[in-house]
Image (cartoon, rainbow, N blue to C red):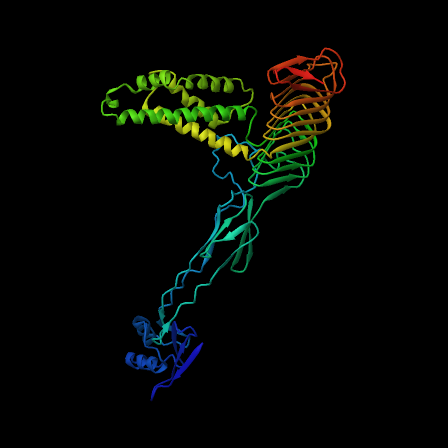
Amino acid sequence: MLKYMASGEGINSIKVVISRDKLTAWISASDEEAKYEKETLINELKKAGVVFGVLSDEIDNFIAVPSKEQVVVARGVPPTPGVDETVELFFASEMTHDNVDEMDTVDFRETSKIVSMDEGTLLARKLPGTLGSDGLGVTGEILPPPKPRSAQLTAGKGAELSENGVEVYSTISGRPWVKVAGTGRTVGCDSVHVQSGDVDIKTGNLRFKGDIKITGNIQEAMEVQAAGNIEVMGFVTRATVICGGKMVIRGNVIGSKLRAGIIFPGAKKISFVLSDIYAELVNLAKAIEQLKKMQNVDVGKLDFGRLLLGLMDSRFKNLRPLLKNINNLVDNQSEDIPEEISEAVESLKCLSGLSCATVENFSKAIRAVYGALEFLSEGREQMSSSIFVRAAMTSAIQSAGNVNVTGQGCLNTTINAGGNVTIKGSFKGGEILCEGNAEIQELGSELGIPPVVRVGERSYIKVEKALPGSVVQVGKSRITITREMGSFKAKQNKDGQMELF
């Protein structure tokens, strides 16, 4: 406290006290029986330096009842503090179910607290502070506000700081994190999420935009998805595992669905046909524009549907067979067709009749086919996607690239691969469809449904041992093994016939 003692001339003494922050002033009397004039007290306050915020009513009360206890007789205006710099995070630490209605059904498998971001995502931003406003003390002095505290924002591993130094973006897909040190924040992104132990009802389904490594098993009815790679040290039992890169299952796979990459069997053929269709559609659109420019043809007065179908019957005769071909390819797919492909094929139905052949539908079809080709182009970049499993039973395995079974083999399992299929053990029951080569140590069994192995016309099938009933197909040529056979290789010759040698 700053203290000031004032002595009256011929009157009892009073004491004036000013607070250290100069926002409050008090007076007290040594003699509670003394009589004071208001002007005298105000003068004593001025002598002590109190010139602002004097409380007239409080002085009147003090005059009426002098007190040895300190009485507040002046108050200043405190400075308004500013706002400190802060760092805003654009990711949460966990998921909550606070807003779930009592009547809603909650899937307790969807309780994973993993937060993941795409590459290039804004992770954090530094928000500027603001200056406060001055105050005024009882002494008339200007009281400056405290300076706002500054915050330090830095980028850690997997992230980068913007040029202006106020934003942090992820440079990889993965799990964002923040380290706090005082007012400093370091924000980064990890590409690998390690799940210690099993994936089960306690952990919830896992979805991550980087890589996932699971040290335990994936239990029944659970789902694991990763934009990158997945490695499972244990078993996968009646579960779904999906990744965009490489999948490695160290244990056995039972009654499960595995998928690596977005390419699906038949994608190459569909891509070729859609490319031809797109080229025809673009040329068809150009032909219509040329007709519009001809002075002797008023396209606006013509029925667009009749014009479109007429051009298809005269100048673009290849389009109808291509449309029939793409429909057959999609209809014959046993696996789910990606939505982008389905939408493109559906949009092409506008070319099948007058009622739906409108300018809007025609333009929509061109855009949809282009979008499907873009999707397939992105998928071709994922041809490195592959699956490695020790053994599989009653499962479905789908890979954009290769499939490798490194242990006992497969039982009643379906394998679809955009690349090669290699089975070091036996393949008993089920079906293999691949666009690359298939190499199998032992094909078929004496019990159960005979297996089927199908490859493209330019690929081959290599088997070390085949049991009767097994079916091998290269391109459109198919044979059924009628007796036990040793090592052979099946391949098409120049005439399109399959040869075993």
